[in-house]
Image (cartoon, rainbow, N blue to C red):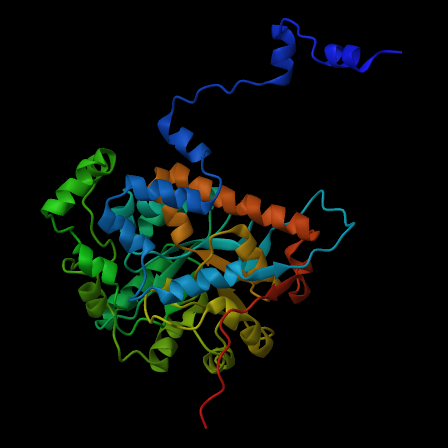
Amino acid sequence: MRTPTAMTSARQQRQVPNPRELFDLVGFKKPQLDAKKRRLDAALTIEDLRRIAKKRTPKAAFDYTDGSAEGEISLARARQAFSDVEFHPSILHDVSKVDTSTTIFGGPSAMPFGIAPTGFTRLMQTEGEEAGAGAAGAAGIPFTLSTLGTTTIEGVKAVNPTGRNWFQLYVMRKREISYGLVERAAAAGFDTLMFTVDTPVAGARLRDKRNGFSIPPQISLSTVLDTAIRPAWWFDFLTTRKLEFASLTETGGTVGELLDYAMDPSISYDDLAEIRALWPGKLVVKGVQNVPDSRKLADLGVDGIILSNHGGRQLDRAPIPFHLLPEVVREVGRDTEIAIDTGIMNGADIVAAIALGAKFTLIGRAYLYGLMAGGRAGVDKAISILSDQVVRTMKLLEVTSLAELTSAHVTQLQRVVPRPPFS
């Protein structure tokens, strides 16, 4: 029988390492010499892309993307609402394969999300809407061009010739400009028009005011210092085509001044009827924020409703679209397709929205963080991150298709409970 001392000695016996055995246990990662690929490979979440974007983008451009209106309460609440989700998975279902495809506004999408309209996109990174449209087309998801985009309708069609292109419309004071855009989008084969209704005037975007944000950018000493430490962005800005609003001929002034010119506080249901008569494709109303308006629009026969508070960029403390979703679905979900945006930063957010009745979701900042982090490759990365998260969440919930997701899979935990009205 071995003594305790002998057993201890045996356990502590040393030997010369065998290099062959070492390589069997440890794999050495090859160095990545491509700086862009290296930083994008390191990004595992949309928040990771946001951190990269912040380092690489001048403050005014980053803040325009990242910020929202006034105290930025609406955006914070929207993101918190998605964080306050409790999932309820099933067990013992075969989820070796899941189907993430859906049909939305009369056409297919490989994922239950598409790219939302964003303005001034080439200021953030010079590939702009072309990167977004190309990446969306490659991923089989829709891309939406903003009225205030920096690439033309025809330019988006050229980079995404066989994919689904949508156009977001502001009804401007000069109605003939809006009507002309509708006709151009139809001629280019865009299949869906987003009639936007939450911008009678510009929201108070205080970050932009403090940064002196305008088109073209206003140069100051702080601007020079800010761009000096970001030479790659500055080089791209100076050596690519002129930054301008591709759909509008007049530029200049602050963001708020431009929006005040472009928007019309007198917009009404008559304008909706006029655009409906002009547009041959699917007509969707974006910016709906209550149940009665949803009911009226459904009764008018619109093809879709997008619950949105404009990413928190208009009325601060506006309703949270994700909280509003179940009530609107109960009221009009059988009559029209309902999509949702604002606050989506994770594929799990998308799955939760689908489970509560949304037919589709739209991502804005999430895509722009990828764009600023790495141009087209960064947008591809953002779409890949969200897609992987959608698939993984579905598998962990043990559902094999979007149709299997129901409200039983999700509980909306609530931090803020409305007080009863004063009487």
